Image 1 (spheres, one colour):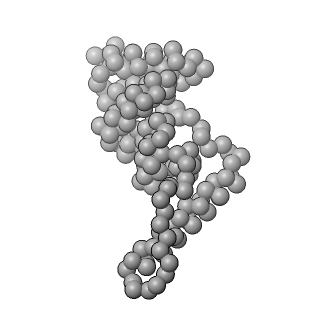
Image 2 (cartoon, one colour):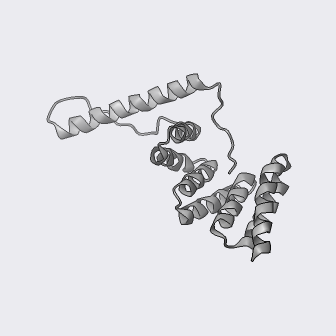
Image 3 (cartoon, helix red, strand yellow):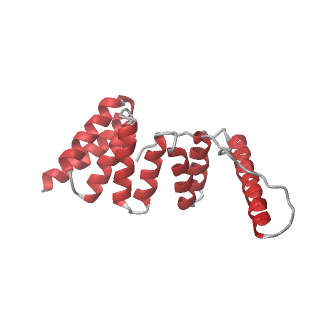
Length: 171
């Protein structure tokens, strides 16, 4: 399953900065929670806006995903999805990994609806149908659409298409 690389290998410094900002946010959140639970007179800090951009949530989700923390990754992708349609592709991939195919299908469909030019979403939905051995005609159309949208990834999408056609021939 293909996905755009939002996190470049050379961006370790940005990841460290992002992780620091998340840790700082968690500390502030802890202090707020602590002050609410005790009668101590700590100043109240209210965070009105998310300190991370949608892209930073995606990057953090990728870091979590690489560490095998897929639930944390999913949480970050959900936060990013409020403003960044690409996040639905990432969410679909997480649900696919968790074998939650209904949620994966829903996420891929949202990715396509919100960004009809996202070739990876078409391919991944086609692969999902191939995996489930259902909707194979639609899966074939989705793989063809992915190739049409992004010919530079034709080899990847062609693999999906060939496997779907082989499975259709067996039925």
